[in-house]
Length: 445
Image (cartoon, rainbow, N blue to C red; front, top):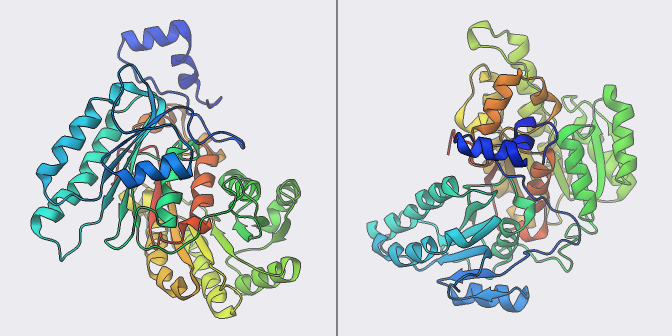
């Protein structure tokens, strides 16, 4: 529960909670977030429509898997296999079976669908059925309450349900690591990637660079990557030096004071990381700024500064990485986009352009890493409780918190958990994609 969100605290109290319910006010549920040692699921999981998925969860993961609904049993999760859909009419039976158990979903429960991507070669009926899953998942995500979420995996035609990225993404969506990811369809593009020997420390032996690491989301990313086993190089501007060093010391990494817009930023980043740690495996482009103004009042200085930090610096650093010959061991690039770059936002034309640029960049960069088993992907946060959002006027902040299906703001760690997943070996089959961390914000897709 966020101590900053007074309303969230009040409506989950005894008397005030009853009053809120009586007046039909939003009642966001406190979200349960991941802690080391936490089990993947606390209770039984119901698997509908796919024997292979059921066997995976029961045998490899040792979960309490049920194949048929059991009266009076509450489920921690429901996994719905839809990989064989060839006509919209085939959705009816599995969807109605899911409908019959949604009221038995525990608080904070998970619904995850596993389906196939539609392709231009598909018959119209096949394409209709598979695209229909998209609307179905997004809709039920808006119906769930009590902190429950619904997400989907969309597999390419030749990707088996046992592929590393299917397994990794399914674990992510079922776990509390995905607490603020809701209503999202994540494409699994290939069978690339590998499963970690230790799911608690999937980044063991990897070296990760995080820009903008001195505070907020960047600080949380550094902490989460280190928790998952990575050696972290924390990067931020010299003005944040003292706080940056504190973060680096806390995660037992190293600090690099660096302006990412400097012409030699990529070379200096590589030099520091290779000299101190001998390798570079993961780069998280988190550094970013805002200079909000209505376009009619925008100045060239405000426009150029945002584009320089938020996208041009990433392009230049990526070019240094790709031409160095040192970024070749299943490398990962994870960039911070934004829902503003997807849906736009009033007064943020410069910011939205830069974040839309990030989405285009990872899409075009991903193929350049494929030969090395690498990926480039983006995470698009929605309203996240940070120092920046704390400066929003109180009423506007309260409204912004409620404009998603989970009816609350996310935490920096929600973004960090998603970055850590995309940086992991198991995400090798996710290529050039954007995963939103927005509680299913009610704007955009």
